[in-house]
Image (cartoon, rainbow, N blue to C red; front, side, top):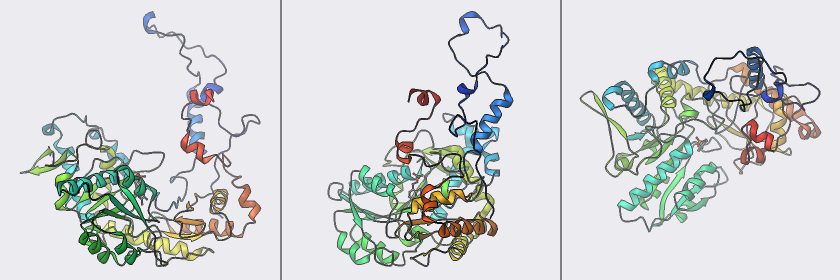
Length: 476
Ligand SMILES: *Cc1c(COP(=O)(O)O)cnc(C)c1O
């Protein structure tokens, strides 16, 4: 089996971790006096004294102790860790791409043209009439969208009455958080046994208190909501809005549009679907699209074109700003370059391959996939095994594991999204890793991982109490 193994630091003392620069810098190097004036020099600054090769090796080793999409496949369902082409990085690194956010519109016409072009592309891809590029992440896009829904109901004099947002139980955690942060009561909607929205349950849940229904389609099981038109009618007849969580658009690109299904508001994650590397907390971008009726509530500024001139404007009843300047410009530039390079046919091809790859991979693994037909991702069950142990053991076979333990309607869920970017040989490598773990003894799973640079870490503390600098490490 092909297997990539992370670098392990081993000096017999430091317990597997690469020493900090300050720990390595044991000798004092004589640095020649730079001849700076006395009042500009300091003695108390403790800088590590290392040669350039030592420094370069330190950072190279750290990168090799990590695992990323440039090391091997990374089938993290819902999160879409796809390989992003390097040409988009080249575009973002062009000197002309560095634009100060406070420059006058007249002097940055090219930049505004790209913003305008991306607003247009995303609108056409999603079937939306107007798009804001400001929100810096998917969750921020959701929040923006729900604030727009709120502004709409308030403008209709129904702000006080519409207090509830309906969210299916299997939805991404941010949907619940968004609705709650927007000041709404969250109404959870359980799925039917076939893994889809329970239309009867929905009819019972909606009413004149409903502000919106937030939906993902294909949903987190990879299933297409076949009743989407009926669902849209139910929500609209009750006076509510239909929100589309488009974080992951990989199954729909160039084939189906949320706007055509009846959605009123959606967000896109350019860092999942449109070529921005993703992970480590950003930066990303979560543009939001809306129907014409809601365009006046979009955040400001928007970009418009009049007679070939691009200008910024504030929509009439704008909810205000949701991010500094115009959002994460370089991230948006990469998305623009990617869409421009692929074109309509390329995007269509990407969704075909995303779905084909997920179906091929699922057909090659020895685990049950309870819900079908799935599209760009599938949720396998680890069965009697603990999904988290299963995932840790996959690391020993040199691949990143899938998302685990979600959604909850599959027991010991392994939510897997290989993406369109993987070749048949890397899909086979992934399948081999799945099958090797399936054949392993329970004790191997519990002890895993042993082939990685770090064994089991305390994930809760790592997420909630991260120590991000050597000073913090020294303090602990
Ligand atoms: C990733 C994701 C989000 C949130 O996006 P962030 O950019 O991480 O804030 C929302 N919904 C779904 C379905 C997602 O997969």
